[in-house]
Image (cartoon, rainbow, N blue to C red; front, side, top):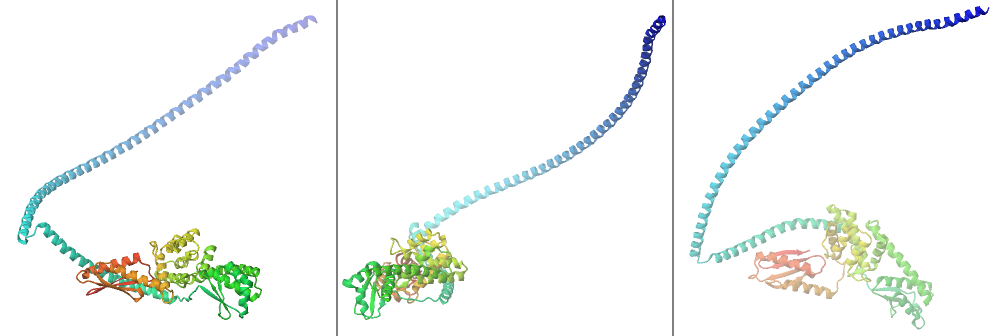
Length: 515
């Protein structure tokens, strides 16, 4: 049994290595076969890739050759085009050069001709100068005058001729212009005046308060005059109690104070209780009523004229103008009238009617404070308009409506004309006799100061001045210039309503107007 086991073991020991070797050989053969197959396939793939690469290479070479041929053709074409363009430009430049050469030759020939002509002209000038000298010497010999004397004589003749011709031309042009301007001006002014109807009420410095009976006079005076003193002290108005039946006179140059006193006195009469405390109470009430009335009058004026958006303080100043007068003309009524006339004139010539009315209404706004503040009503009015941000057109109209400043717009000129129309219409204003006579005397003094004036007369209430000139000293041509000078000096040195007609009388008459 043991030997068998040993034999088996020996057999196993021998068989296992042999089997392993055999298995290994078989496995190696299989691996070699797989490797051989793989090499074959790899070789086939490599061959196919080489063939594909060769084909791709040939295709790309063909494409590159085709592209290079195409680019070569394009470059050759572009080169041909450039050569053609260069040849064309060269030909054009050559033609221009030939043209320039021709022009240069023509210019040179012309220059030579000009030089020849210039030389000929110089010879002619020298010849003319010599002939002129001979002529002057011959003229001096014949006339017995030197050239300077003859020149003065000719200048004098020419001056007289020019003066005469200029006077005739001035007269002709002015006559033609005045005919047209007067026609238009009359049309505009007449239309404006016909469409504007203004009432006129003369103001005075006194007010009369009617009393129910004469007993009331004693009660107004009071014990030892205390009531009348209190009323005069509170209002600044003089109470005149005289023999006039059932009436008391209030005297004051300030219409507002006089109106406050009138209202207070009427309230005291109605109440019946007249003593210092009641007087103070009624005066305060009267002041409030007058302030309210001032504001209402200003608003009514703006509404009547149709001018909106005026500052409330300016409305109060407009209302105060109801109690102001100028030569007897109510300032507020005058301003309303000027506003209406300005609007009508503006509509006639196609301007802004609302702006013209605004400028006309505010043109005398300075008169509401000129009795309280220093300065003319023109300066005060322009300051007020600037303070309350009025437009430059309105400010210029305020400054220029009396000619103190040059007007910068047609609306300012319209306001000037409307102010003159309102002030100069019959019955609008009163003038004192003293001011009237001084104005006429000044008018005659101005005209008499001119050389050649024999005498002058101011007629038609200062609306016309007739100037008699010495015929030997003033000729017909100089009369036109003298009329201008007199009118200009009247405008510069005098203040007057409307216009003044200047008549210069010699053997013929020349008329001009200072406007």
